[in-house]
Image 1 (tube, one colour):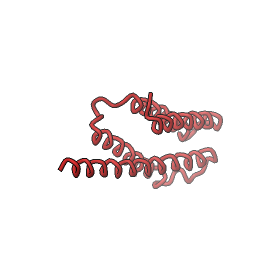
Image 2 (tube, helix red, strand yellow; image 1 turned 180 degrees about the horizontal axis):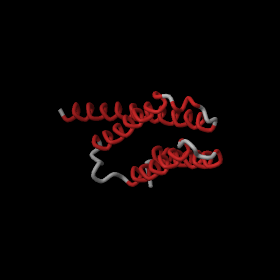
Image 3 (cartoon, helix red, strand yellow; image 1 turned 135 degrees about the vertical axis):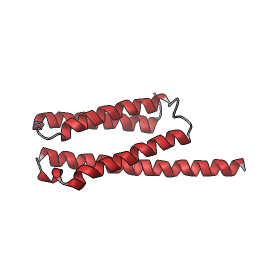
Image 4 (cartoon, one colour; image 1 turned 30 degrees about the vertical axis):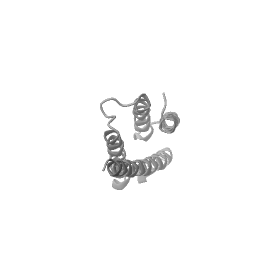
Length: 132
């Protein structure tokens, strides 16, 4: 019975991880797409789907991350690399908001975009290394 329980627990984690990685990809691709639109001052950014879809994608992304922490019983005491990823996420969000905010100058937008990419690099580094 314990082998079966371990198997199903491991399978659930793998499913969550695949969901998480898929939505990471969608989130980053969406950010890159919207950043290009913002740099071109495209009116397409004002479309309802372009404004709402990232929130849905990012919600699934965060929920899958939380579910993996719960699955691994690491929610109350997450490893240091998870905390490093959370720090990177906060920087990424702040830079992304500046980059995509209407009325932001092109030079400020580019600076924020580069900062967001650096934060993504930080997040990916700790995601792959899982060390701190």
